[in-house]
Image (cartoon, rainbow, N blue to C red; front, side, top):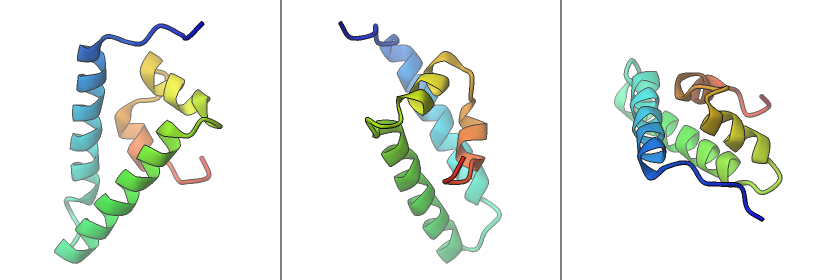
Length: 78
């Protein structure tokens, strides 16, 4: 049996907050560096959240154990 999915409104709020935090992270950088930062961080986060071998990260985000602000600042190893 699959775990119950969070309400759509919760997922939308998380995605909006992630986008905002990614933009804030890259805001102080020059244009080319900002684009590289946004692209690489977004790609990394999407991969890690959808990775079947890493359900813990997704669950920690969904239950609020890790915030979007903290998630965008984690290193790939973390």
